[in-house]
Length: 388
Image (cartoon, rainbow, N blue to C red; front, side, top):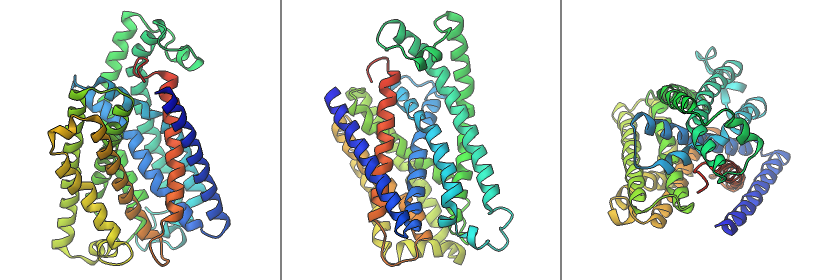
C-alpha cells in the first residue's frame, strides 16, 4: 500500500503541474474566459466534496450512528481543504470574477443591489468563514481524544501539529468536554451548511445567468454536493482498506439513497420548468438540453448520474464488493463533475462548440492538488488511528 500511495502522490503532483501550466497558458494566450470558467467548475466541485465530508460526519453524530466509524473519520479528513478553498475563493473574486460573472461588466437590471461584486464577495466570504470555522471546530473536538490515544500508544508519530492538537488531552474531563462540544457543534454545522451553501449556489452558479432563477436550486446544490462526498468516500474507503463487506454494503446503501434523493430534487425542479414553461426558466433548460453543442453532454450527465447508478446500485452483490463499489463511485464523481460543467460553461461560454480541452487539463490540476493534499493530511494525522 505504501508503494502504491507513493506512486499516487507522484501522479498527483504531475497532474497539479499539468493543470497549473494549462491554466497559465490559457491566460497568456487570450483564453482567460475558459481558464476561469474551468476554475469555477472545479472550485464548486471540490469545495462541495470537502465540506460535505465533515457534514456527513456531523449527521452521523446527530443520528448516533454505529456502523461506519472509519467512514466518518475519513469524511472529517477532507477538512484539510478548507484553508485552500478560502484562498481559491479570494483568488476568484479578485482576479477571475470579471471573466465569469456577466453582471460585473454589465449590471443586471433590477438586481444591481444584490449582484455587485463587493457585496457578493463579502457575504460569500462570511458564509465560508462561518461554515468552515464551525466544521473545523467540530473536527478538532471530534478527533482530539482519538489522536491523543494514537500518539500515546506510538501508532501516531509526534509532530508540532499533533502536539498542539492534543496538548492537555487524555483526562476523563477533557474527553467529556470534547464529547459535549462535538454533540453541540454537529447540529450547528448542519444548519450553517444548509443555509450557507444554498446562498453559495445562488451566488456562484445561478447568478451566471441573471435572467434565470429557481428557488429549489440552492437545496439541490448542497444535496448533490453531499452525493459527491459519499461517492468520494465510497471510492477512498475501500482503496485504503477501511471497510469490510458489511460496511461496504452500508456505504453502498447510503450512496443509493442519495442517488434517489438527488434525483428526486432534480425531477422536482425539472417538473416545475416543464409545466410552468416560463421564458426566464425554460431558456436555461433549452440551452443545455435542446441546443448544440451541450445537449449530448446534458443527456449523458442526466442518465449517467441518476439512472445508471439507480439501476446498478440495486444489486446487493455489487454493494458488498468494495472494488465494484469503487468503480461505481468513480463513475458518479465523473458525472457530477460534468453536471457542474453544465451549470457553469453554457452560461459563460459564447464561442463555438463545447470547450473541453483546457477545462479537463485544469480539472486534472485540481484533482492532483486535492488528492496530494488529502493523502498527505491523512498520513500526517493518522486520522483512523494509524490505519490510514
